[in-house]
Amino acid sequence: MTGNNKMRATGVIFIACVCGWFVMELEILGVRALAPYFGSAVYVVMGSVVGVFLLSLSAGYMSGGWLSKKVNIQRMLGINLILCGTWLFAMPAFIEPVCDGMYNIGLDERWGSLLAAIILFGLPTMLLGTVTPSAVQWLTRQASDSGVNAGLVLALSTTASFAGCVVTAFYLVLVSLRLTIRISGIILFVLGCAILVQAVLRRRRWTSSS
Amino acid sequence: MDKLVLKLCFCAAIVWQATTAGTAAGARWGRLVHKRDSLYQVIYVYKQGTVVTLRFGKQPAEQLQSQVDVSNLRQHRLEYTKIAFCGMLYKPAPRRILVLGLGGGVIPREMHHYFPTTLIDVVEIDPEIPKIAREFFCFAEDDRLKVHIADGRMFIRERIRRKVEDKYDIVILDAFNSEYIPFHLTTKEFLEEVKEVLADDGVVVANVFYNNRLFEAQCATFLAVFGRCQVFFGSYTNNAMLVSPGQKCQTLTIREAMKQANILQHKANPAFDMLAVSKQFRPSIRPAPSVKVLTDDRAPVNRLQKQKRRRTEQQDNETAGKRKEADLTVDNTPSPY
Image 1 (tube, one colour):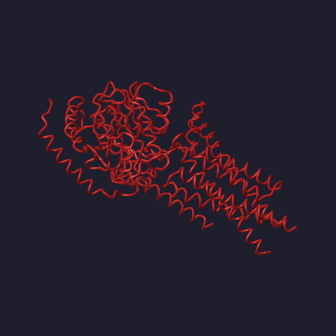
Image 2: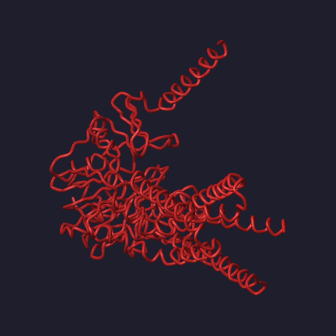
Image 3: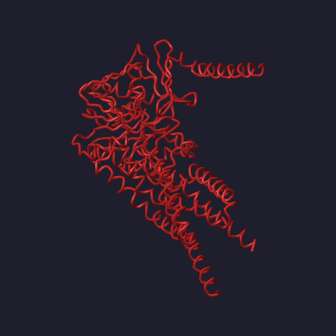
């Protein structure tokens, strides 16, 4: 039983880390993706993208925490990651029309880049944000463990964010931006499918044995 | 208590050391007369006698943004500001010029001086730079020379969106310093936008450094967008100007470049030797097929820039060969005057 628990804990933390990585990868690539349309004025594009990421993450934390009380956590996580992966896979095709659209509706580079960042990165970041609170809930079996588990999940996923940040900024910018985002989407999609399949199998085993 | 005093002394010593080191580094260019933290860089202005020097941040010691002798404004102290005139060999009487990147303002100011009917737009992203150019570098705007505070690419896109009829005869891309190059001003997509604001018989001139691998990628990108690309190399610096003519603009042969330089020398009568600039001309350049075009999707410009060029020696020999050829040509070319 303890071995099983350990496995589960490792799996949950692994998922949280993968999502932590992709949040920061996406954030850096987001700045890079919007620069051609809104300029390299640091305080404009950087501010918009980082701001939108923080806002979306808090929306994700909120809804993730709330949902983890209502629905099956594992299934919810699987579906969220599949949605996020699909969005990221499709997103590169929308960067240009969305950014051009901002100018067409008469927004300047400040509000234009902010709105473009919300449209392009708001949903996937929010979905990635739901992972942290539900991972904590998933790990926690008794109330007294909640602090330890929250600390563990946050520490490890933030460390993964750091790695995603550095690797993206130093190395991934050397390859195609759109390809990197697409491949990230595929990875998240596959991970989401694996989680969902496992959730369904476990449920079936549980119903058949009872 | 003693420890605190000691610590304070130590800190003071460090601060003093740092400030004096700063001035010592600038001693080559004289006294530091102005230092300013702008949104984009730390700007240093040095003065020695009548010579004013502009530097950004901690660039390698030999890299200057701009240098002007305020007692002799016609003197080009940096080679690339002379080579920038190579666009006039293609368009001897430009009506409109666009310059991205102001710096000390030498290029637009001198073009304004030698071409009194030309309208010049300068785009500079950093609002502090025009103030410094006015105060220290004898740069002045008037109704023919205007500075716009904007990102170069945003300025061009805005012009395309507003469908401005007036196209530029010459577009000069100089929004770089040797340490940092904004990637979105190097890509294929950007050059395609430049093409839209360029007159069909106009010409694009880009200030580049030819001693790194970014140079090859830039050549490949210019070729991909404009189909043709010619180069004017610096003779004693690593600067070069990439030139791509618009659809209806003729490329030059070495002989024509010489001839045009001669005409320009007599007509505009610049204080520098335009013929010397035209001798550094290379009519065509072919980067290796493996060199990738820079795009919005992939443009590792600052990485490529740090890598030394592999084919430097060979290409330099080629340039040297062309130079000899050019010398021969000029001897045989009868001056039109």
